[in-house]
Length: 161
Image (cartoon, rainbow, N blue to C red):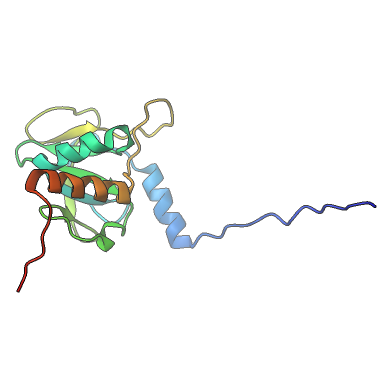
């Protein structure tokens, strides 16, 4: 008896043009040459955490974290997540998510210290060993910030009436 195997037709993944354009913008984004205010909701959405939570979350995320901006003067850290994803988060106390309509100050490429915004983890545009991606996985970041909040403030309790 002879068995005939046929190759299935190749699978084509169709991407909505707006989604592809957004991915292209994110992929081509790189830090500016000088401090610059940039809009959220285009290449990324920023997630702002106070430094006391952000440092704990960073320790938990380690090398899985994407790019991070620290602002020593204002005692906060900013992560970048895909546009639109942070809007669906369950709130984490003291953590703010921003989308379209918000602007944040982005430090110049290579700036690693200072009182104002500077890179803790600077994104590397080229693939390679030790490459830091621009975006952080939103679920992993949410979990790390939730755990950091619980560790710093105790478990969250609901108000009883």
